[in-house]
Length: 260
Image 1 (tube, rainbow, N blue to C red):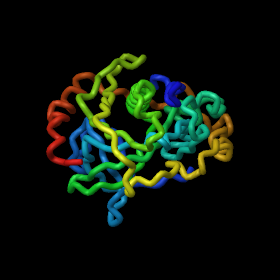
Image 2 (image 1 turned 135 degrees about the vertical axis):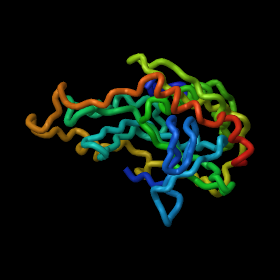
Image 3 (image 1 turned 30 degrees about the horizontal axis):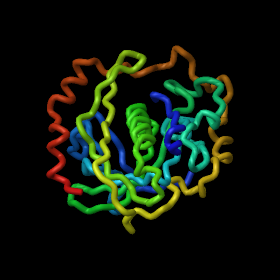
């Protein structure tokens, strides 16, 4: 049985950048259209700078980690990772006693893996794709299901797949809102390049992140916890989403602009 067949991310440390991220809405700050991947943190002069990434990239399937991300406070998160080689994070879910601040949803499924991706100027670099975003989780689950049925993924050759972003899939979430899920298609297999070293992406040597569990399990006093009446941000309307996406360039038009 393929090692990827046990992936159960649901429909749902020591990490260093640059970081690859899937975004849906346009990033007006850096003039990036939505529904594409971006690279952030590769510019040493401006670590917050983001650029549009190539629609093709190599993924390190030998070093994928899955686990949980928990925002213990707004913009302050901790991770708990399953051991290397395990693709079902459910046994490692941190305990959660309820909301600790408004919009606290508790631990969310997360993943981390290294990729070799090209920037807008055509330069290839190693980046870390690590997200707990629902649409990215779904994309990875589907990719792992494909790998479980692909002989090259388990042939022991050490070759790695090149994936291409094709037309994203729009699906309905359980709340009824639309999710834009990146669709990744394996186009070819190549030998591992020197620019993508065979290293664990979270820097813990592949062990389960027991130490991080203490940070995730922190529960503030009841007086500091959020209540159900706390302020919540209303989701954007379908009309607003349509307007935001109307000006975006077609995804497939990016292929020739940033060659990989």
